[in-house]
Length: 231
Image 1 (cartoon, rainbow, N blue to C red):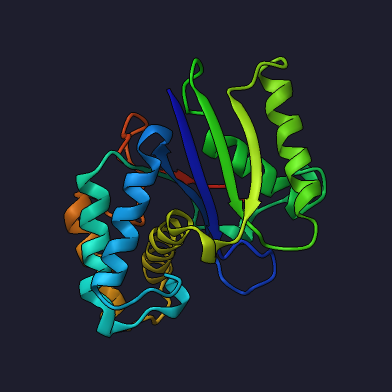
Image 2 (tube, one colour):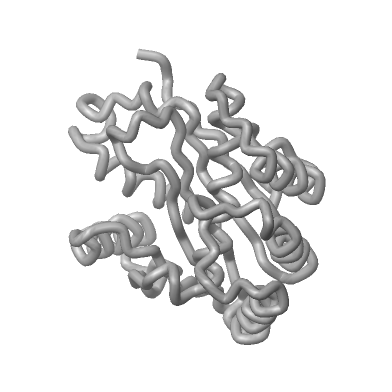
């Protein structure tokens, strides 16, 4: 069995004045990739929205589309997992991350991907974020190669553009909703009615509270609540 993992992050910058961050992926069985992709694209066209799906471009008029895409995810063999950090200000890069936010980013990817079981092959696709993409990919491959003693199940890492892939777009949307709820729980005055309605819908469909972690064995919609210690 082979899987494709489509990874994106939200509020990942170190000095963006946002106290939370989230990194996640949607997991797609390679054998069903084309049918699942075509189904999502068909829904976008059905709702007259062929453009890129992004949380930062949320439109209340498109709520029926967002809900339909969410229903499609839960009705098909797709999985979502993310790492949520609600306390970005607690990060002590000097002592614990070898001095840099980039190294913390690599750690997050490691903890995000590691629970995927061996004996299966994974191809990992990441949204392009900056000009240092190749350097970051090499570092990620090095980390997993070392952990798996040269036999990593993560056989391929590649950057792609989010506008070209509907799974990265859906990942962006889910982690956007999760960080939005986490920011509200920390006291930010975020009261966009459409976004609040979608957050409530995603919580209802998933049966989860988006700003809390799930059980480790949850596979359909897994949220790992990562809390750095108070220094």
